Length: 439
Image (cartoon, rainbow, N blue to C red; front, side):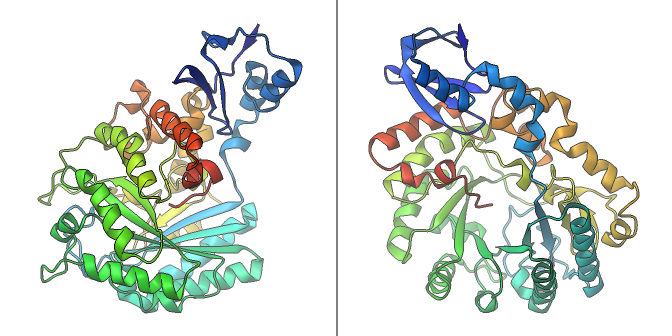
């Protein structure tokens, strides 16, 4: 009797059965009658069984996987830092979790110096090979002198230690002149929120109430022309008003942009009770749409599909032991959701007590995925990665873990993927095929 691994999912596809390996994302198809109740009942030749064994499709490899789970899930050769330079912004988006806090708070130079000290101390501990720095605000381009101070400081560290320097910038896309001057990085990724023009201009407007869609589209074209190797991710923030216009949006940018961008779809959460914004689309409605119609629209528009069941735990700051978010007031949190915490330690305290136990380090120890025995023993660990327990996801739906619901509907996603394999468009699945991340 040849039993399938507990990490393998059997998915109906036409008259066949697709076996999806959640560990390595391999997919194979067998006749439906070849598998019954998680057991391969068909007579397979020795070579086929060898391939299944080597690819971890069989339960005989489960023990080895379980004993090495941490190596599958954690990559200590990467450090992720998010840096909030300021709270000031030139837009007034009602759904922004920072809305109402545009008080001009700007990070101090001494705080940036302490962050560099922190990065040095982590390097002494882990000898990481890649530093990922996400710079955001507010709107970070409004405080360009602060932007360049942290940029030059961390780039200098990377060059001196032979560490790869990856820069990610969350920007509204209205101010690009400074960004065009950046150089010396190993990779640069810009994330720019943009949605269907009529919906976009209603919620992403400047202090005078003017919509920003046309100006941002023009700036995206200029940036791509001058820095064509930069990854530009358009973040389509989904709500009940704009989800039905997604295809129209893709058609519009298909006409107006001079290149095929990456488009990331994100659920718009109601994280700020003080603002008049409500999203009537539930998170589970979003997951359903993501796994079906959104993929169809992206494929038909020949735009890369960044939707994927692949979970990169190491890139989650909440789960990563040394990754953190530094706020503009000099305090530190596990991730963006720490914005709502009122007991954050300062980066100075973190650096001073780096080798000692403190509130922050104790919290981070408990937050790592390997500290969660329930997650580590779960057969869905490679699909979920513990994301259902993250503050940002629990705020959307606290029951996802118990209900075994994930960021995509796995069955529907794999069915969509296989149909694209058949019609020759599999290369559009840039995350699922290449394992790349566009966070």
